Image 1: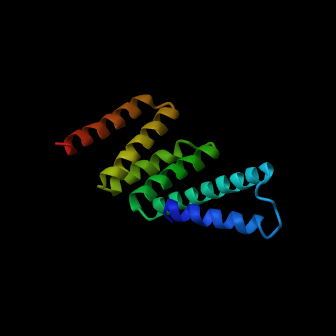
Image 2 (image 1 turned 30 degrees about the vertical axis):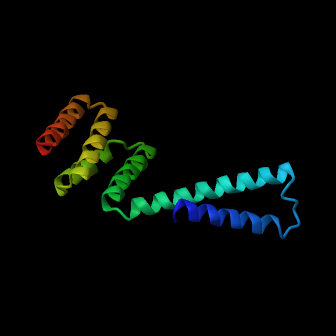
Image 3 (image 1 turned 60 degrees about the horizontal axis):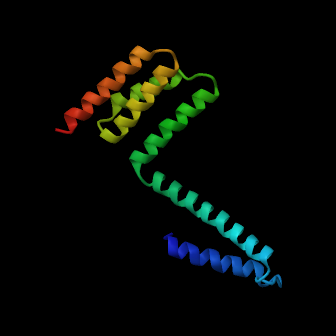
Length: 135
């Protein structure tokens, strides 16, 4: 939903919630409540829109999924297990956007698991690939 439509919906909703209850919309505390409500609803719609944008784009979704995989492994105390996932992604795709994210996430995972030399090597490999693609 576009921003102007979203704002119209929020204003209508806030009016529906306050007016039928007999609230004097001129009272400062009521205006503050309305502003808080509008702020919360705007944030909610922003989250919905961002989620839609990510999930309707295969590249964005793949990158987000890799980040979530990394997060789950980190929370389980198994950071090193994400390394294999990122290596597999690099084997399976030629998509430059997904590859760039995989290189970055792989480099971070290697560095964070004490494999800094491998991290440098993989990041340099990604850099060379980008330089060659930029020609």
